[in-house]
Every structure is written in structure tokens, then in C-alpha cells.
Image (cartoon, rainbow, N blue to C red; front, side, top):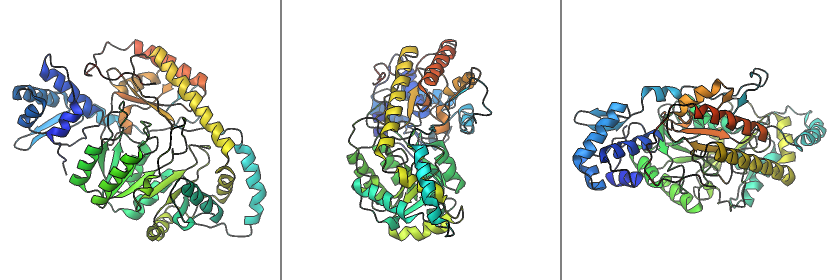
Amino acid sequence: MNRSLTPEHLATLICQFPRKPAYRGLRQVLQELIGDGRIPLGTRLPSERAVSQALAVSRNTVTRAYADLVAAGFATARQGAGTFVAVPDERRRAHEHSLRSLASEHAPEGAIDLNCAATAAIPGIASAYERALERLPCYLGSDGHRPTGLPTLRALIAQMYARRGLPTDPEQIMVTSGALAGTAVVSRALSRPGDRVMIESPVYPNAIEALRLGGARLVASPMGDALDEEGWDLDGIEATLRQTRPHLAYLIPDFQNPTGFLMRDDQRARYAAALHATRTTPVVDESLQAIALTDVGMPLPFAAHAPGAITIGSVSKLLWSGLRVGWIRAPHDLIDRLIKARLQFDLGTALFDQLVVTELLDDSDVIAMRRAQLRQRRNVLAHAIGERLPDWRFRLPEGGMTLWLQLPGGSATQLAANLETVGVHVPPGPMFSVEGGNDQWLRIPYVRPEEELIEAVRRIADVWSRAPARASGRPEGSRMVIL
């Protein structure tokens, strides 16, 4: 099913563009919107006449801009049907490159792996394991088989939601082996092969694959301008919902991965209303919710605006990536379906790991230490980029674990390939796109030690300085780095 774009919405996305010559400026800004994923693959562009009226340019200008898009591989023209957004083959293939972490024992000496936003343990984790080990004998007389999780842990998670303004019954909680496992369970329980599932773009790549493995037909819901404070293009989201009427919608409202945006309460309310209007069930990933790095006031959980929402959480990002414990919060009437689906994957989460999490979930000292560590590393990375790559653009996120960086020009996919030759492994934007866009973007997590981040930026800047001269297709007056 192809989506269409109204001329009014297109004019809002384009805003201003260079008009000397106008056709070239229009083509450049359209290509950037497509490359960033803000106009999704397969979208039918408005007619040339409608665009000329909306932008106050001649029809010949639009005709030539569309023709140049087709020639560059960013659109296809179908006789009698219109012009449809496409992605050049070489960029789409970049998405086939799987996101992987270099196991430290196999990594070449001196290599810096920036592929995964995975954290090492911090002080306080080891002592929690010791305390959990002391409690373990009490459980060894049972079979340890609890598909929904330890009652104590489920109660703690429910209390955590209540403190955030969302009353929750422990019976609404099912403990899982991480957030990704929770996503797979929800997909298996609530969708059938061929069902449409709307998903943000750019987004966490492993979520894309988890939903695809469940047989979903993914529908991209483009984020807004990644350098604008709004974050979510709610007009576009509402149009996508009306036109595709997906069964589920996967979203990350808290420090969205990879952009770092935090959805405001008014945005959550509007988004939830749009989902309700199309009877679309939201699947809300909150695995980064606890990683606030400023004093920003945290909004209510998305489920407070959407009572039928399924919420997925995890401690793996906050506490330690080796601690694979997450959870699903769901309405009472869906829990049995989720349990049945979960039993197709495993019979429960490791009991010992659950005991460790009960020791850590409310440990304010450990959580504060992790936040302080990530805040320091974020600032070090941002400063290094500002010094060595001053023409790269980004906004400093208020939480989460990654910077989403826009190159002044060229291909992030090609740059990532070149960086591998100097031992820096970084994922290019197309890996975070449902449809292969975002090739002007890189994601760099600030989870590595400060000296590694500084060295990585030094190598990136060295490779970047040797790249061929490149022209930027951005309109004049576009926003620079936000700190």
C-alpha cells in the first residue's frame, strides 16, 4: 500500500530552499528529506501542479526537480500513477549490513567498537550479585520455573510505575530476558504474519529485525527534523496512521534511539489519540527511560495517555548490558496471550538475575553513578566533535546513550567503511532506517571510556579530512550544533 503526501505537508517539510536555480534547490532539499527518511520509501509525491502552487514556483521548476530525483535514484515515475519516493540501490544495501559488536577477544588490537550502546558494570553491581547469592538458597527447593517472573520483582516494577504516575498491578507485569525479548513476545502474541506494524524511522535496528521475524509488514513513521526540538512529525504520523491503519505501532518516546528525543506530555496525548482513532495498539519501548542526564522533568508514561498500550522496559542499558532482565507491562486482558507467546521462546528469565535486579532496581546510588558517568562521557564526546569536526551537526540529548550526527555531505555508509581501515567501527544511518535512508547520519554511543571516545573522534576526523571535497545540499540558514 503506497502512502501519499499532501502538498501542504510537503511545503511544511521543505520550508525554505535555495532558489538560484530553484529546481536544483528544490531537488536538493527533497533528496535530503528522502535520505533522512522524513519522506518514506514508496510515498507518492504530490502532483507537479499542486507543488508549484504550494511553493509558489513554476510548474517547470517542479517538473525538472522531480526528473533529477528520478535520475539520482531517489524517485521513480510511473506512467499515469505519479512520482514515488525510492532509495538508490547502494544505500538500501547498506541496511543489510547487520549491527554487531566486536567481541573483545576477537577485536584487532587498538580497534574501537562504537557499534553497540552497551555498558560495562560499575561499582555496586558486584556487591548486588553477592547479596543475591546469599538469597538464592531460599529458592533452590523449588523448580525455579516462573514464566511471569519473581513476585517480588514484579511488585517492585509495579511500584516504579506507580511512582511515575501510572498505577499498576503486579499482575500486569511479566519479566522477560531483556527488552528485545519482550518486543519479540509482544509481536508474536499480538500480530500475525502480514499485519502492518508502524515503526519510527530512524529507530533501534534490532527492533526492526525482531518485528520482521514475526512476519510484520513494517510501515515507516518518519521522525521530524533531527535538529529540531519537536522530534516527532505528528502531522506525518497521523497521516500514516489514517492511510495504513497498522495493527501495532512501535515507538520510543523516552530518549529515542538513535536521536535522543524526549516526547512531551502534549505530544504523547496527541499521539495516543491518533492511535486510538485507528485502533492501533502502541508498543512502547522504555528501555532508556531511566537514563536522564539533566534535571529535565520527565513526562508521564505513554500508557497514562493510552490505557491499552503495551510497555517494554529493561535494566540492561542502565545497570549492565550483561544483566539480561526486562519486562512487559500490559492490560490485564492481554497477559494470558503474552504468557502463551512467551512460552514459545523460553520458560522464564534466569532466577538469579532477577534476584540481582531486585537488589538494584531502587539503588539510587548505583543509578546516580551510571547517570554521572554517561553525562561526563556525553560531554567529552560532544566537545571532541566540536573541536575536530566543527561542521558536523547534532543536538545534545538530555538523556539516553547516543549522539546522532549529521555529516555536511557525502555518504555515511562510505565513511563507515573507510573508518574500518583505521580500526573504528561505527554504524551509518541506513542501519537505523526501515527503508535504507539516513545516509547523511552516523550514530556514536557515549558508553566507552573518555580516552577511547577522544581517540575515536581523532581517527574519524583524520579520515574525514582526507575524503574528497563534498558539497552540502542543505538550505542556507539551517541550524548548526545545539549545545
